[in-house]
Length: 273
Image 1 (cartoon, rainbow, N blue to C red):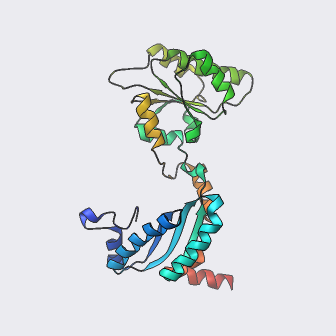
Image 2: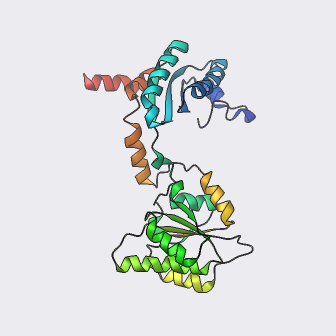
Image 3: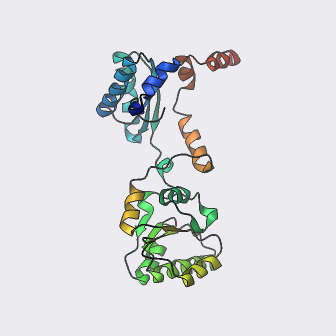
């Protein structure tokens, strides 16, 4: 199931109840920590116990790298001592996996990129976001001083910023310099619209200039991005591959299969002998 064990209770089909109905066991997953992490797990364990669902083990996700060894050691001992179940995995945090791609922002804003379709799966961290409230001169200086992969946000009335963004792309293209910046143009759709002349200029550019429209104010757009947690999807192959390579190193799959009574466990054992 997705979410904690009580998700779905309002319709009488919580994750714990569904697991009970199908005779399945559960692997509980919680974010990194010690006391608060164990407390959260205990709440879910009690609900599993109430529905006679066996907890096969626990995976701790998004552990601070500097706390990894401490968390792994403590949680392993605590789970065995209090529950008699193993720690199946302890995963250090990898911030890249939580960075939204422009395709994620398309879904968030329920809109489509108006330029730069080929850059839809380019990712940006929260620290890469820059709200433009300065003059054009200052904006151009920032574009040249900040990391190449910066997500700029401006209001639709800032024609100068939009033109400056397009001009900086052309300058870098002429000088064979990388251009990984993207621009989100904001403005409530019922009140503001991108000028036709600007839209024509954007359409005239190469498809390497990532520009996205947000039908919200700049403030609301920033809030939405900061509070957004992107989900893995099959189309973002770069992030999917990164997730697979990261997680497979830290989860004991043989123990996971053994604890859940999966037939693959015996097959794997037979093939390795």
